[in-house]
Amino acid sequence: MRSFGSVVVVAVVAGVVVAACGGSQARPSGFIGACGVQMFNTPACQKAVDAKCCAVETECANDTGCAGLSQCMIGCKASRPGPDHENCVNGCALSARASYCESSCSGRTDDCKATCNKTGTPGEPYRKWGVVAGCSKGVPYPEKVRCDDES
Image (cartoon, rainbow, N blue to C red; front, side):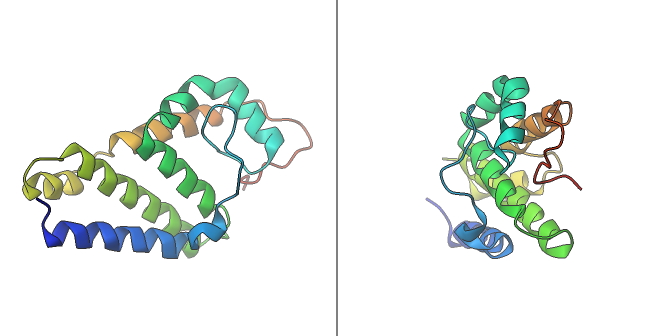
């Protein structure tokens, strides 16, 4: 049985993510990527990532927490660099952590969720997304194409 406190925490975290990311407006529609994870809104850049990182993208796509985190991060790209973008990215990480702890502690006491949420190590979805993000750094992107998250 879930306590009122854990439901409120999850609802607050979800609200922070929606507010920080601008809700569904920030998310692209209908474009995910050939391997199930979207890293770019620019199709040529996404195709380059898919060609090099498909195995790790597929692993992420098969984890609902990682896939959700990926979509949240793509939504953050609509935020300009600065506090709004940082708040959005942090909200994505917090939401992924809360979801991971909720599922990992299913059937356990509320102490499990509280301890999980306080732990300094990232949850499994965030770790998987980090592997995809790391792989994307070594991709040979097409020349004369500006990928949408270059800074």
